[in-house]
Length: 236
Length: 314
Image (tube, rainbow over all chains, first blue to last red; front, side, top):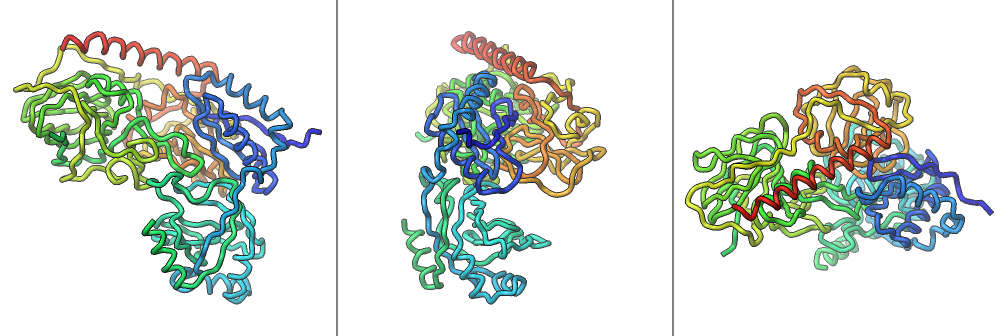
């Protein structure tokens, strides 16, 4: 049975190949990306330097002294091996529940977003927290997770003028996705709430709370619990 | 006695860099590292350091640094007008200095140079590297460029006591041919080959994340595509039609269309691009890219062998 999706290999750099499974945001394509990433990490060939999953493509960085054609042949063989591609993505996936305090100062756009969607703020929180998400990729900034699985009815355009400062931990909607700002930065996504968790700390190992491919659910918390969890995080 | 570097004046953008971070790109962590890693490695070799020791990367104007104890230094890259307590300090070779102040001044004929000091800049490694990640705000010295008043720790070195600066008569010059076009592998994008037919100028808004090019805009499709991995050397085409060539501090994924990538052998040349400078591109095939990368590695290895043969004599 050949159930694996088609996959092209393109040059990304002289020391990197790009495996492209498609050119759209799609859960099936993204699952194939994470399955391939997991397979490569398990095999861990000596030339492997970095494996970078994105929505529908996978960057594979290799030791610059390795002939690119040899790595290309190894990747081609892996793609054509049905066993590699039928590895269920869930094998590598973890389930992570992220506490979020919605609205108020934590989510300054909640009320406006709810109004735009024809929902009450409580209704928007309920639907956002009911979703089951997947970390489709991490990028933009260290530890910034792009979460797929947003209820399509909750998709919202980005702000016409991005904010100069978005607080660290802000949980936001940008287009058809939801994400979390790991540190204070400029940003144009719509802010629904904030998690007290530190998503990225370069001095921790591993530095990021979330990994590509992880399953994520949000748990609504109140400001007291936010303060308690934030204090616990600061103390640990 | 702890060995330290005191930053008297920081220069335009001086950062701690080593060979960069690998193994964390899947978490959105940039590679960072010296924009010309070979130059940094050779500078280290000249002062007796491990090739991967941390050095200072200078941008357009170097810092003024005070040493309380003797050091051995080496500067590789664009030419500097370095002076030690008023005496001219030569580049491209090991220089023994007594305690005092080294002023590196303006860079000539390029944008960057790398200063190695014996013992290496001994800041704590973060995620396996001492490189400064300016966008991430970590690594190097608190994730930022040097400021006046900073104190950098040095590792144990080889410097011996001297009364005046001392340097051998020989030097190395790993400079690249500045007159050749930047060679790249073209993608399947319809505008990929047109890149080579336009004349470009380096924009002043370029930085360690990328070189912005100015010129007659290329035809670009509106809106971003689905984000894909990018790498140092990736040539992006934003909607305004003016390409961006990513450098070592590049983000890990991006949604702009790709025109291709600069070949590995020419990446160090991008580090020397000065704002306002013209730049041309020429497409090459994969075999040429591979051949030039191997030739560049062989050349650096030969220079390394020459250094090792001469160092014991000084």
